[in-house]
Image (tube, rainbow, N blue to C red; front, side, top):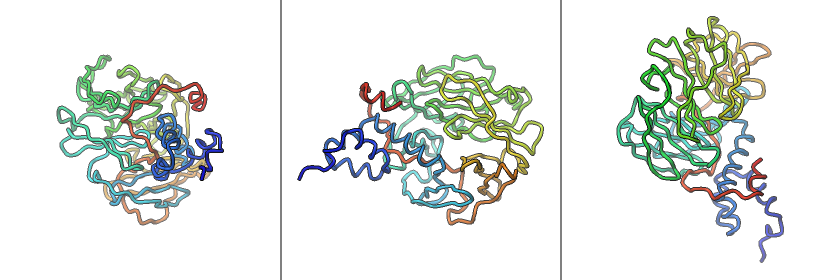
Length: 362
């Protein structure tokens, strides 16, 4: 019997497949040779990531302190557990994430792993020396789709290219009076991956001056990014970086500890302009404990971390107040990691895009 899908135009089949979860797509690769070709195409994979981000509104998270690892959906004061994932990397610290792939390490900080929790695929990497005080990043070159791991330690940084399957070590060439990315605000050396680049905030030894730097995968160089004018004050200590709504954001509380202002950068690696995204009033917590996770409508979900208690809150802008999430079975977890349902794994060098595929990506 003829395949009933053979009567559908390829564009229709592709659009249907784009809306399916990664688990189903892996099974459907065996339906036919043509379906396998479509699903394995790197262009389709990237479009599927975009579709997943859009449909889930960036409010799916992994809770790594519970095993099996739950995938939860953050709604309006509710936490819904969608599935639980088993992983042999359950006890490995998570360093950073990009396009559904997580970079992890073991206690030696020489052995690393790239892990996609949607497909359970992984790849182990070995670094030439231990680097527990380094800063870590993941990024994908928007021009070539080459997926890269970045480890920045003291005066040198290492870049792993998934295309070339090898490391290169480079000396930092930008002007800085600081020793390296080992001096950071807070205790977080995770790079924030947005628009294909990885971003870090770092400061001098006394935390009296802040710089926002990023790794540009197009030329494998570190560069400085101008901060919003209100944050560029040399005495501004308490500033953090995060991704919200697919954009790079920085937030700070200035001299007024009851208000936290979140700024968002324009899209694109080369965009340098900023605007205020939201001002959170009546904060009632140290900015160290304040971690914005995502938006649910016009409300912002915040992870409040403390030494004895960690809790999820939702901020209601119209009422300028916080409400605690309903009790759930997930338990107290470490920093929630954004989860993207993705079949992406950066091991294959993509073929050149055709004219039709370039149009489809727009």
